[in-house]
Length: 128
Image (cartoon, rainbow, N blue to C red; front, top):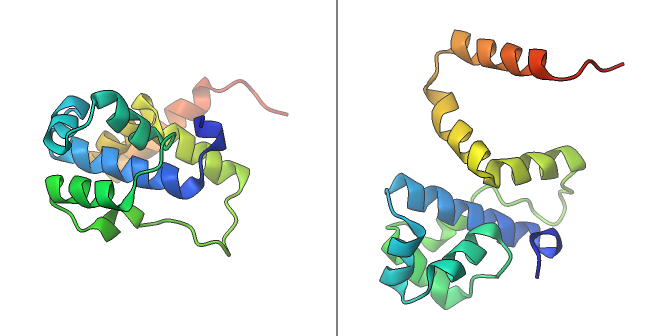
């Protein structure tokens, strides 16, 4: 299953696994070894291209010292449709650049955040 075919819940659960793993300073290899998988399988879980079984999520949650419900935080309900903007933001936040920006941006002062947004806007091609 490609990421394009992945269910939004699988993508969000994977993103939350990756977020928590990085918060703990673990590599994909570290996590994989602790739960008896290959780093490639962890990578597929984090991308949402493979679904995480309940038992494996339990093991991941135990290793990452979080309750399993943590990995479902902010998951849209079936009644909420995810629009193209939200889907694009979600994909970006799963990229290396997105994760790095998400890690550092909140640490900036509000004035510096505005400056970064202004800088990025200035780099975009002019729109009609």
